[in-house]
Length: 107
Image (cartoon, rainbow, N blue to C red):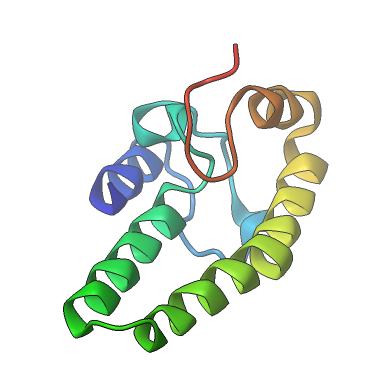
């Protein structure tokens, strides 16, 4: 999923760097972005979860929960604010139609 998301960004010639969302040149809505606004974070969560399950027990799941909490409460809102400012209505329509994490499109 992460590789597909990076490929979709490169096709639109936009940045994949989450630390500079203001450098985005396009709202990417195809590929995995049809099902989630954050396929790279979903992929990272999946890798962390798989690693935690391989280690066993509940304690290895703590970093997964921390990662999701930080992404959902700090990183993603900052990115959404920057994208909303840069792309206005186009991004807001995409935001309404596509879940932050995972799910079917709401169109």
